[in-house]
Image (cartoon, rainbow, N blue to C red; front, side, top):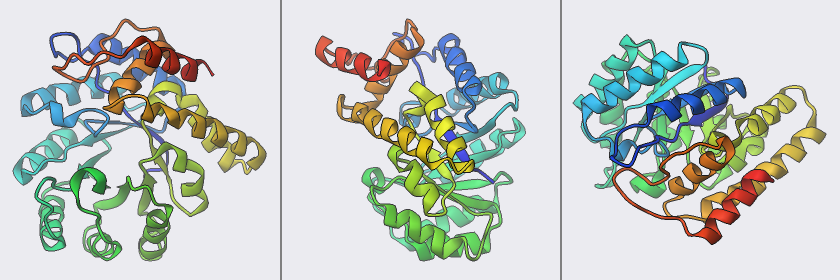
Length: 295
């Protein structure tokens, strides 16, 4: 159902914390021109945690859906510890003809898998859109088991995939081996950019990778090379992708570095901080980001 290269869109804010729709539209158009298979909004890179108001989220979803106009798939991050809020955003996204929703596990409390099952089953029973479960244990303190995902995939047809953001290819391999044997349409997507090739070779379906905000064409070309079985070209692209991942180590939070790289690559006059903060990048780091983007 969901295959290929998906961009978790950075959310650009102006100096007053308002969503910078003009520059976001430029970025979205560039991503579509570069051939991404889909765009994901309100994920981790998209600062869902910094947009607390349901009305603000709905306004943002409406704006992006109007820009995308069905030209690529649109997935909405609707994760929250509040089940009712998740369901409301899912239904709103369905009304706007989004293609699916991405739902991160409840965070902070480290709930056990009985709670995880109840959380996702309640949401699935009250949601029409396809659901991708978002496994990100580094931020949620929960690493979803293969057995739990298999159970949910077996019981709910609208649970169609998992985004696995763990620094372990064995996780991807095991999700593929355990679940795709039962549900061939179930998609296993990696959340780390450099896992594109390992993911595909393990039987996975692609990535939702933050670096595609900067150079989506590198990733879409790599995916095309894989489909064409042009492995010589694919290895060259993978090497370039691996080099780009240095960006994640240059700033904390890494989202600031991503926005700075977007600013450089698209020559945009944008605010590069996360919402309502004034985090400045020093000239040395800015130079390193510029060099990475240009290379």
